[in-house]
Amino acid sequence: MNKLLSTSTLLVAAVSLLLATPVAAQTTVDKDAQSIREDEGAINKDNAAIQNDKDKLARERADKAADKANGEYGKQAVDSVKIGGTKTAKKEKKMERDADNKILNHDRNELNEDASKPPTQN
Image (cartoon, rainbow, N blue to C red; front, side, top):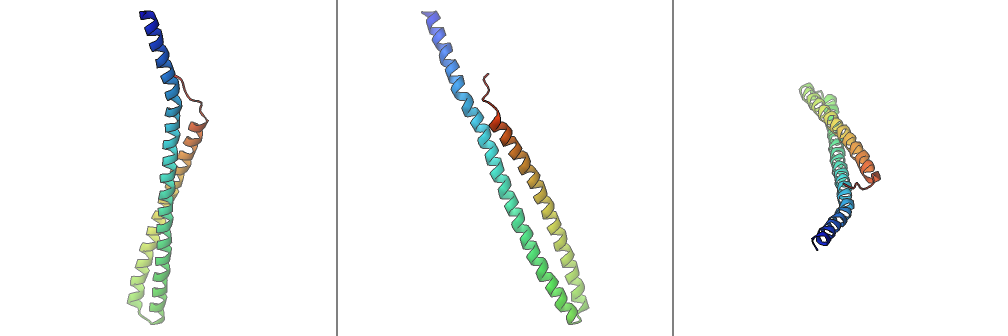
């Protein structure tokens, strides 16, 4: 009787392990997919911030042109400083977007690797 009980316990444990393995593999794929969604969201935010900087830069350049046309050299100098700051901010955001793109590519590669792996059996 004890031998039968231990055999059935072993069989139940083996079946449980087999059923749990695909779930664990799917969980890894789900985590990778979630990371990709988060990366895409970060890139979208970066793109929106870059577009805002482009719009701001256009306004600042128009202000500088107006100040130049009116002979207001002091304001023109201030506008030049603002333009420089906006250009720097825009470059920083582009670098951040590039980093987010690299992370996204890495996460996509991980997803492809995890999705192509057969479920492991321990």
